[in-house]
Image 1 (spheres, rainbow, N blue to C red):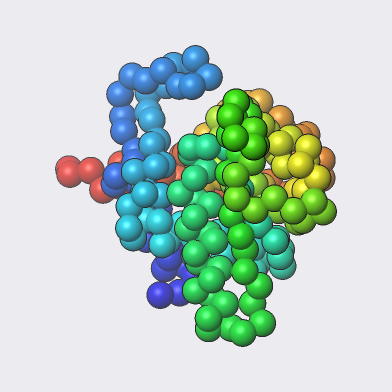
Image 2 (cartoon, rainbow, N blue to C red):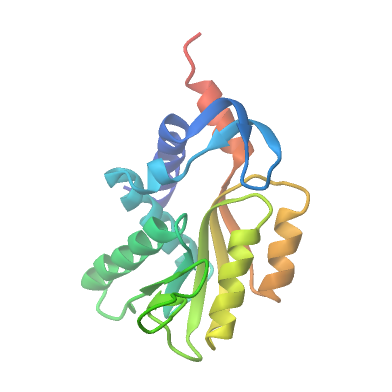
Length: 201
């Protein structure tokens, strides 16, 4: 399967299993006539595989080489695992390919044990990719960026699966990213268009 085929297959799956029309209240409190639950795609066996490949392809296209990938629980959780696994599979085929390890950012620090906010890979000075499933206001993405920086990691790029293109979302994430590029695999409009194109006439 080529890169373009993987991208098209992921868009088709997102539109089929994650997109809903109706009346919804978003996490931001705003109302919307559609909802995209990306977790039904990223936790889908094939959807997870395609998500990992799509993000890995994007990294290769832009010559980005993160040491780790992470994001705020729980929207980012399956994306992180899928990218890390995809990097390991790619490394088996290309001996020089580096592994991309994963980390998850808790919404608050643990009150027991080690009291960590970041689980998994956490290396000071490490170059990291921050991921999220849907970007609306960008608040969860920004929280992950800030947590990674507080842990001493260097954010080199930010990727979301679907960007809703709300007025304040992208500018807020770009400001928090401090020059690191912000990419979206799809816009909500693209997923909606794909969904409508598959509706029975």
